[in-house]
Length: 350
Image (cartoon, rainbow, N blue to C red):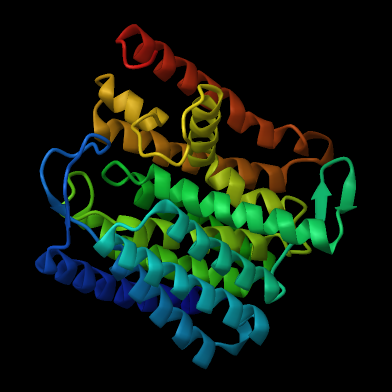
């Protein structure tokens, strides 16, 4: 890709970011309000649904990409599966922002969207592990693992969207790194789709950080999680990158770790894991007195660290590659120990 072509792509994304900002500003004017309650961190009603700007910018960009950039298109069945599923996720999530549906309705919509993407042929059954080579788990197990991954990543981004700029900032960094890695591997659909997601987020984030004038809402957080999860599946098909199926999990490792640990803690404590709560690490950290902007920046820096690990993996000798993804774990364990110890000391946990 030439420098001139890249600058044209950036100019196109800047226009989409401006469109996203206009839509987000319109959602502030419409005032679909998020009312405070015992499980939320904000103290006064704030508009939600800012993720509509992200969705509009992304889908318009993808439609133009499909029409005019044939070299960056997926095969038609994959493309239709991804776009229709992403659109369905966004629509159901937006209706949930308006009506606050029960969790099982949202989960049913997510399952249907994930199955639609997998049924289109976008799944992974062969995993290339450092030192072990390719492992073929079969199409049925691969479809199940792919569906599980999409559901977990979609909900992880949804659960983490409880603090100004956190979900959007992490998704923005993840999209930037994924675009760069995909361009290097010649994965042009993943490259362009990542840039389009970044464009939508760039238009939204000035309204959400450091002090939120509007929240992303489920329409934004679920959509970002779903798109990143599906792009992670597409990235796993990069034949030139031995790391491919770990790219997005590494970029989102702080979010995935927070959500997985919280679900495990609540399950072991006998709590209903689908019930609303304020027990995520980032929430406990804020309730324990840490400034919200600092917590957001910590998670964003973790996404940057994940991106650096991806780049280090690609550049490392084969003998070292198996160890590099493990470097993401010690900082997360240290963060969990600090937050949980502080929360217990302040009586925030039993």
